Image (cartoon, rainbow, N blue to C red):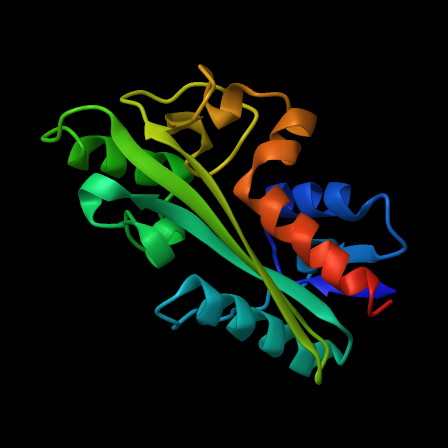
Amino acid sequence: MKIIFATQNAGKAKEVKAIFADSSIEIISLYDLGNNIDIEEHGTTFRENAFIKARTVYDIYKVPVVADDSGLEISQLDGRPGVYSARYAGENCTYEDNNLRVIDELKEFPEPHRAKFISYAVYYDGKNEREAVGELHGYIIKEQRGTNGFGYDPIFIPDGYEKTISELDFDFKNTISHRARSFTVLKEKLIVLD
């Protein structure tokens, strides 16, 4: 079965393709297709935004779609940046802009800065819907470290580790990440459909 992954993020596409590599499901991302669909994520939850992406891409291609919405929730910031994680520092911001804003906002709070990554993964084929949630708990540090990740990976250390996500090996990261957790569960739900 071929499924389009509703993302133009090359890092996300690489992670999800690796998760499905041992299955009969072939993942093709919007990034692979060279399609720069502008999807307005107007939902107030990760779940809503994930299904907005999946339904939008399905309506264009009429083939099964997986999508996710993911982000970082920081306890001391009342769950921010949350669903605004990708554009927390403003429209057209960079990953570094977002990281610097988080670091700056946490200056007034005592350590540790408890946080969690959340990934809400969904499947939609015009009729069937499946969903799964993955979380990775840890804390935020004051400086960016590592080059192997993207997004908030350089400032997030998972519980039980001393390295940021960006300092971890890609293959290892892909076994513990929030996205790995949500898409692994989703994959098991899709194998039944295949």
